[in-house]
Image 1 (cartoon, rainbow over the protein chains, first blue to last red):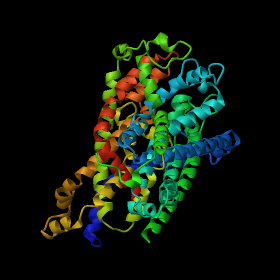
Image 2: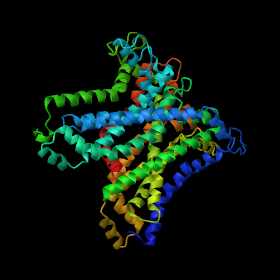
Image 3: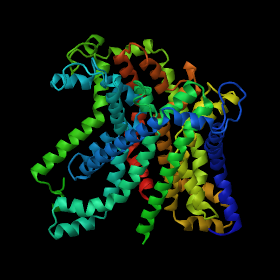
Length: 294
Length: 285
């Protein structure tokens, strides 16, 4: 069903609703963001063109620091997601009784409304009465109550850990699927030749899941870079801005203070980074599928 | 029970290692839920006492009864959440199903680029587009309506949905459609009477995916575009409760568990199809 003109017209008709939707809800706002970033738009109905003023202003201010913090936050979150997710997938891949139940038990953070999971973390981080501070005190690891969300560096790590917690199930389940799609003959042949379990893992499993791991880390990178709910609910970017990532920063500027123009400039910088990630992602994926096709 | 094949046999210390690792991993994943559930059972004077005691030896289900008074709109929040997710799922399916068919079966100029462009939408979160969307909603006068909470979210369900369903539809044999076309059926008739019935399992997976995602992610748009209590979905409704100076934790946790019950039910019954569908779509490129 390729080639004919009526087929092409029919295909385009099928695509029309989705294309129009995305144009209205994603493409137009994207263009409008770029446009607004050169204006002094705010709540008042009129605004004027101000050229690069917004960009000059944000890069003179603390924006560079926010960018750096976002990258550090994202780096640690993605690295931990991949590390814990890979360990989880290896464990779930082991042919032991109970693995089907373990797999189901891995998924709740992915399924449950994100905000609800974060409320629970909010309680766990409570300094006086929360679980983490409480258990650490019971075991004598810290002397007194530790309110994790009250200090800059502990709040930073607390938000990273919660973000890792949200992301781990997806990484685990996808890597597990990648491991299970490896042909079993490979293992059996190696086993017949006397290869041990660890050797089989290192020489068969690991090389075979590298494409899935690279793909997954890039998807995680993009998701983590966009992370909003976790930080907003736990700290709203505080204390004293120590958990303010670019997304939080944009939200505070635009929606918190109604500085639409300046917020748009911050959003545009986020989009530039995201576009770079996006290009990297597509290039990697097409490289892998080209190699698989050979 | 049949014996495991030789290759799958583990020594006792390997088994011990696997189960110990599994326990640690699952503890990390489930700790907030375990703690959250235990908190919902503990009386406040237990919660606000030191030293920390994990087990609710004085536990009861009082909080589950009190929440309906202290969060009077709780039922409404849950219904709002279900309503928002259901409508979002329906709209998303109307967009996804035809588009997925177009990408699965037709090669037309620019089809590869168009598919890539759809997938690129996934890269942008709603947060980045919030300013123009907010202005758009305001100028249409739809702030503080269900519309404002549903419509933007759907855009972010479409790309993954198209991807998943396209993968599924590509596995349907072409001969069936070709036979129908040879018999003189129109393309639209073939799509409606041949493809749609055959793709129903795939469409169901996409519907489950869309519903669960819409239920899980209804925060930022609902927080920003709506301030009317009676329209709030559960996460935003409870966020107001969470943000108070003195949080009544056992009730907040009880309300959270009641609120996630609908998704847990959907998930427990359908998880097998969901996992299979999602991972098949993700791994095939």
